[in-house]
Image (cartoon, rainbow over all chains, first blue to last red; front, side, top):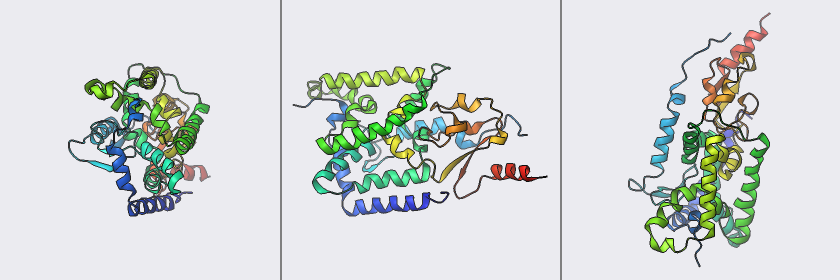
Length: 45
Length: 284
């Protein structure tokens, strides 16, 4: 259990790298730049 | 017997300053724009000055996208997993702006109640229902719809200055403001109620709390049951039994224990104080 953080961190970094490879960071950036009406609590009709 | 009144390490003494610095740095769009990166704290991306992406918002969008593309949100999950494997919930204790707000509000009233321990499981229910199931079924970020951090950072200021946004104010906006008000008032009387029982991101981080690189140790032999740590804990847990548990935000306030009974180490180095106590116990 003491060293479990090592494989978890490696898996996490690998997932980030795979996500970047798939271009997910660009999708996240696009979502972050769009106005999140749910976050503000607005009702857009 | 340990000596009482030792001086806490520097990283424990500057926690409040670190929290303020983090709250500023994650909301510094005028300095840099890193909105493709998920910041490991609950910082709403609807905030006009947010310079990072909110991991919880991105996670829900990723879950919703799974339905069409059958693709796990690798990027967001990886960001959360890597950070939690290294630090556990320390992000909640040291960097989260909403945690800072609750800590500051908690200073108003000295004696504050604690959430019942069982309420700590509620955040997992919220994560599963509002963070996974409903976004998957409806393509909507349901946790964001209730998140008080969004109301605080984006919901108050933007509709005031933007007349177009103002015309979209409806019942949901008032509900969100009500939730925010409830947590603001609640934080004065209860220790970090949102972090303890409602934060879905905290629920994700807590999964690695016990196995992260940053570790905390409780040494029973040094403890005098003076309750100092219980009174000091901003998350309202009992560090003697729930240290590194699901509701421990690893703020390490309890590590200032005057009897040296709680230690912060890393998984790389053994707890020297624990070893010393064990060696003393083994002596004939």
